Length: 187
View 1 (cartoon, one colour):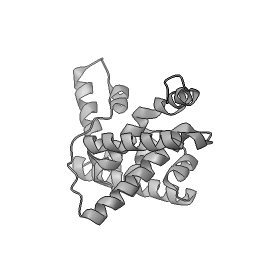
View 2 (cartoon, rainbow, N blue to C red):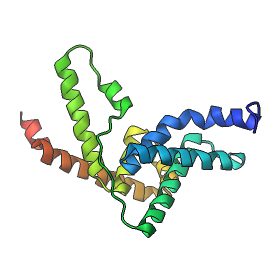
View 3 (cartoon, one colour):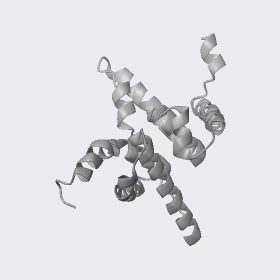
View 4 (spheres, rainbow, N blue to C red):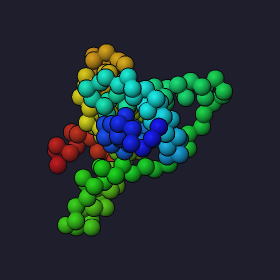
């Protein structure tokens, strides 16, 4: 296809603009930067191939659905080939760090960076079904309905998984920090 093809331009304007979100979602699913790059590339290839039949109102959720399905397909293929070992590397989600940055004091920046690292590690400890729900809701900002479409789950399942994921995150963070909600309220 030529560069001047209207479909290429439309694909760039509607789908390619969500590359960062697709990579971030893939990174959380894969837990490995290199695998996330491969997954993102494969998902974009599939999205480009399927773009002529694109009829969704929300291109970002359509793309992330493709990322998820590509991940699940690759995971099934890997399971048929044997166990997969994930290399756990610390990943800094740029958007969160940018939001948390406070140029006023270096101490606050260090504390916030540490808190961000704790949250990222806690999210990585969640199972895939809980991790993806948290990432889609809290990091990508999708509504419950959009998450239900992306994950191909019922709305009630999304709400239930999100509640359980939040409870597990709270439990993990409490065990790591030694602080509970009740001990903070007393202080």
